[in-house]
Length: 352
Ligand SMILES: [Mn+2]
Image (cartoon, rainbow, N blue to C red; front, side):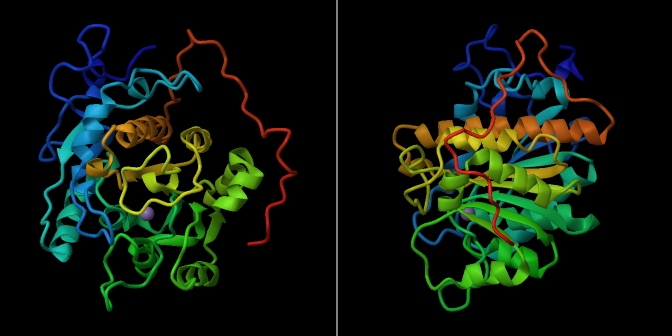
């Protein structure tokens, strides 16, 4: 494998133990937002959780994810993807936020992601709570509405909380649709479940043509069938990938603000993320990891591992936009072809 630039390869654990040194994301080089040129993928943390409606703690997510991510190696053994060889990735540290002012934070975070976007760097945001996807979308949608795939227990399409507060982690995608940042006809939300208020968010989704895949449907049809449909919805246009760690069952990821039982497994999530290879992903995030509720570190470890899957498909898209083929590790045998399990019922996508 020949990397695009050896200066952007992670520190190898074959040379320096992974517990040693300063923990950058996946042991990538640390770069400054003030001089971002050269990178093609940029991790940027948003240590902010003032949008949470229940248990806070996601402000500690970025640092914990960096520590856990030092376990990540070079190659995806399931797909042979070599993301660090495919695109130049770097860690841009954490965005400046204002924990006491939602509006100011939305402005600050948008401006910092715009710096990456203006330098043609594809951002991967480390949350932080899910409200922080909104300023990232505002930074990325300058060329028009985006397609959108969301893995989550909740739609985050609610209108307001606490007597009219319109900016919480339960409302970002309602705002994003209203602002024209997302194309509702190219939106899909997977894993929705749990108790709810009155169904108003689902009514908004239905009225706008947003495809919601409830967890019951995902379990019944399986990841392959659901992702075939999701890819058709996203199409070939620019798309954003948002992964809320609470989409995964809290048996695996208890360290989050609003856990809901009955979720998908980490393996389901890996299969679904791998199925996004070839989609034109122009930005991504992983949010809602709350280390104070994660005493054993399982949630951060799952989150860091999902970020590697996200990086693989995002690096692939960044390379394709530049006319390069994604690098694969030819030393590995051809991947096992994961198909729909024969025990799954026949695929019958419902009408939208
Ligand atoms: Mn969410």
